[in-house]
Image 1 (tube, helix red, strand yellow):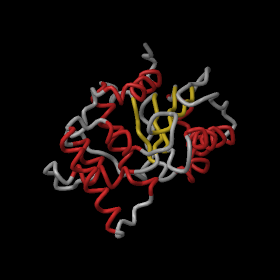
Image 2 (tube, rainbow, N blue to C red; image 1 turned 90 degrees about the horizontal axis):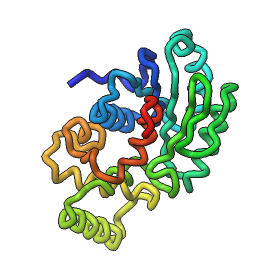
Image 3 (cartoon, one colour; image 1 turned 180 degrees about the vertical axis):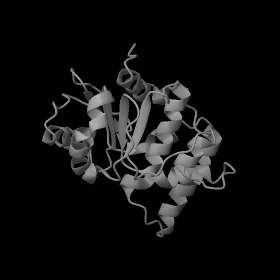
Image 4 (cartoon, rainbow, N blue to C red; image 1 turned 180 degrees about the horizontal axis):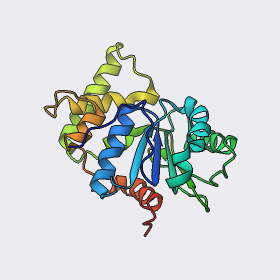
Length: 217
């Protein structure tokens, strides 16, 4: 398995760039891209949080190697603060602030070079986060039923402190605790082959990545 660079290190070596929020997002995306056969074409960069996207994009796009080799950029953000339209508007504003044409809607790319597109997790529509998408891909219905019962029991106990907007994290962590992982986090789980990349829930995201790499169907 290839070594993964530190999440704060920015190295532009490939023509396609993906900007994600955090380390877990970076690890998950690298494994999905590897599964699709695009790892030799794509760099995944960690911006640390959606609040830092605006400050990241402008100097990133001014780097000499960006101008020389980058053909397309995909921005992936969670919709954890409301519907996907809210997160998309923030991302589009950050792109426009860097004097770059803004995408017109989630999942769509601009024309010209470099092309910019924004994908809002989990599905470009409703509120949610990366873990919502991953949780939907779990095919073991009986095990998922156990996880749901556990979360419901935790809620009824009065001791659950997880916010509703982050509940998918609790569900995913509970699921991963059953998968014999030394480090039960979503990125490490991706590296260990836990997620089923062929599941239909990933197809819209994979279509976005194919377009990023110039291979749209």
